[in-house]
Length: 295
Image (cartoon, rainbow, N blue to C red; front, top):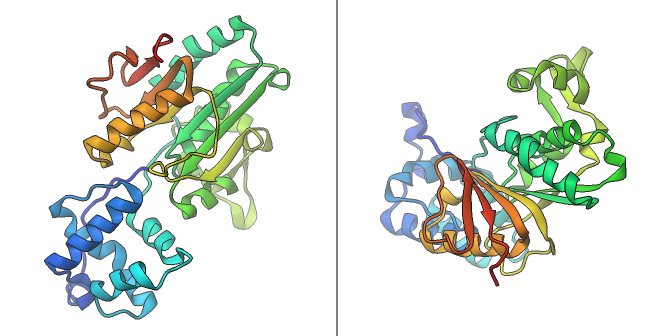
């Protein structure tokens, strides 16, 4: 899950819709509900964002205002179906292939050579907040370029997100040719199949990459995570910035518990670790290594 909200420039007729007007109390209730269920901390100036994102749900459900929507979430959604729709609506996922490319260079130049030298045959990488899948597939391409005989290795990539819509998109593995601009041409020809006819303008990830990745829904604030680890590398880029300090500290501790000794944590360019020097040491820009001697 990686949200980067932007204010929408809406036409006047749309703005007159009562469902784009939210009272202080409605916003306070929904903001706390969203924080409780996703960890996302919405500031006061995100009122227009909440209205714009959730107005479609109110129209779909034929609800007149956000008080009715809040009541539905609290008392008439026992299976959590609308909760899932609300989460999908409130989060926007922005990512690209080879975004923050220095992370993948670090894998190629440092992480993978050390793993090869150790002669271990098991590698686990987690893309936490994988959005529409570009990050996970970039990791898979980097793996294939670094390990010429991957059939001799037990390599698995977990790609998780809280948004079910983007997970479905990622699992299909179909992307517009425009979105592949940052993928080097030789990798495009090696790992993508261009569409034709009605699929012209799109390309599909080849099965050799898809087979390496498991896309799973995961809410990072859940009390128990289903995977056991340990992971050699965890990517959690441009996710922590949307959480409050308390949750950031909790997640950084949990990530350390999921990493093998000397494992690596990759954060976004705007994210930094302060006060966690006893657990992590900085080894590059937004790259941190778990200290082997922590308990």
